[in-house]
Image (cartoon, rainbow, N blue to C red):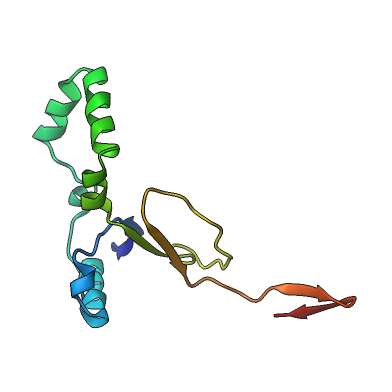
Amino acid sequence: MVERKLPDKVIPIPYSVRRSSEKNLLTISREIRSTQTMKVSEKNQFLDQGLKIKVYSLIPRFIRRWFIHRLIYNPVNIKKQGGLIVVTSVGMFSNTRGWVGGFGGITTLNIAVGGITQKLVKKENEIKEE
């Protein structure tokens, strides 16, 4: 997810870095930053396809569901659309801090960074920060 700032709000956008094994860290960082600052209208932000959406809505529901099911559970499509590694930030969309619990999914590796805070630990009848 990449946080894109519009004039009046912040919107999370799914983004995949392609061929990351062939790029260095600086190139990946620049690619993500350019995605964050790219000028896109809110209409395009939500993938307003116009005619394609109208035609899709005319197709019977059971055919649409079958088609979507085929897309969602096709491993090649999963890798193409979502990639194999997910990197996220705990405090990206709010100022809260927290500990990351496990989150599932169909990806190979999930990494969460940031948002970790000190916690109170009770030792020998005393409460200490660690």
